Each structure stands twice: as C-alpha cells, then as structure tokens.
Image (tube, rainbow, N blue to C red; front, top):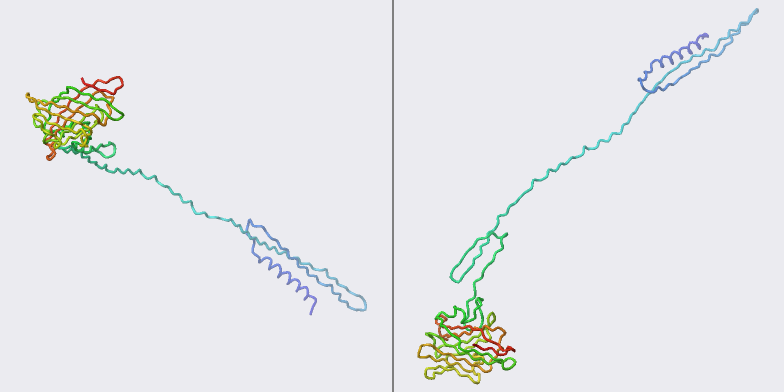
Length: 319
C-alpha cells in the first residue's frame, strides 16, 4: 500500500463532515440560533522513509494537515404559552317590573230590616263605608208590673197601650205625703173622675200609682176586685191589718158615684213603705182592669200636680 492511503482517508473524512454540515436545515428567521462548532483535526504522522545509498539520505517531512469543519446547528424552539381563561359570559338577567294588579272586590250589600209594630221597612246600604243602625222591635208594655217595658217613659196604666178601653179625666182636689219614720210615710189623695163610664171596682182590679217626674214610681198598688164591698152608692176597700200584700200598705179606698155622674175617690194609707221624693211634681194614676179578660177593656185616669214641701222636705201637700 502506498503513502497516499492515509492522506486520502483524512481528506475523505473531512469531506464527509463538510457534506453533513451543509445538509443541515437553516433555522427560521427571528429565532435564537444555537451554534455548534465541530472541529475535526486529523493529524497525519510524519513518516520518514529512509533510503540508504551510498551517497545521500533523503528525509521528506510532511506538514500536518488540519481540516476544520464548522457545523452550525441552529435549533430554535419558541414555545409561547399564553394562559387563556375563557370565563363564561355573565348572565344578564333583566327583571321587568310587574304591572300593578288591581283587584276590585264587589261590595256586598247589607240589608237592614227595621220592624215597627205594624210596618216593615227594608233599607239597602253599602256594607263598609256607612255604619248601620238596626232598630229592634220594642217589647210590648206589660200592664200592672210596675215597669216601663216598652221604654217610652210611661209606666203601666200611664201608657196608652194599657188603656185600650178608654181614659177618663181626673182632677186632684187634695194630696198629702208625710214622712213618719225612716222608711214609712202616710198618704192621702182626694180626686174627682169625670164621666167614669166603664169603671166598676166591684168587678175590676184597681191599680194605684204615684210617680215623681222623671223617676220610677214611689209605689204600685193593686187592689183586687174581690176585696171591694158595696155600701149604698159607694164601693169600699178596707185593709187595716194589711192582709192584702199587693195593696202595699193602702188602708182604704172609697169610690162614690155622685148624682152629677162624676166619681169621688179617696185613697188613704197610714204606714206605707216609701219616702217623699225631692221632686215636687207628682203624677197620680188609677187603672181599672178586668182580671179575666184581655187588656182591650182596661180603663185609666191620670192627674199631675205640683206639691209644696216644708223646710225639711218631710211633708208634701197640695194645694
């Protein structure tokens, strides 16, 4: 083998390295370049070929051959990571105001019925804005119970409801109320009744009431018909021992029909349970009622007088 063989090998290796370097792709523009320099140094040893001759020695030195291959390898990898967070679009909720709703309830109609004794009146009024007043029917007057049942301010035979049979005119002639003890008083009344038609104490109960103005009665006495006796033209009631409880202390009642057709009445009680009132105006009422019939046959008579009082108020007299 000749001396050229090692040299050719070195040259071939250098050419191969250069070819490989030229075959690498160029890096893209704008990217950083990574440069790799590959240096291949091939040293060729010096071979001394000595030829012996008689006349000369020849030494042929070979300079070292250096092949430098520069391989530029540029690798640019740019990874740009932009974190992108995609938030869901906000939900916009628009609440439209509801239109006002007006509900109009129909007004009920209140029917108020006002009953009178003989008539009935029906009035229709709106229920809410106008207050209503319902008038209840009055209670009927009960004759002889010493009460104002129908609340018209009139007691028993003062009330026309208890005098359906008729009323007679009575005139007071004399009246006297005297306080005797703590709760006991004496009474005397003299009166005249004009046209006493329908009045007969022998068959009718007699009711005697004395009432101050604006106040309840001082007493209400009932003298039953069977307690009367006839004495000529007079009719007498006598109860000195107070055996008749409903008479409330009246000792005597005398009724006499005069020739002129009038009736003279005398009422007397010595120990009656009442006290003379401070009021001076008194009403004296007598009622005549058939005990076995209805109220349509009742007869009444009433008189009012203003009495005089003494300084202590224990004695009231008229006139």
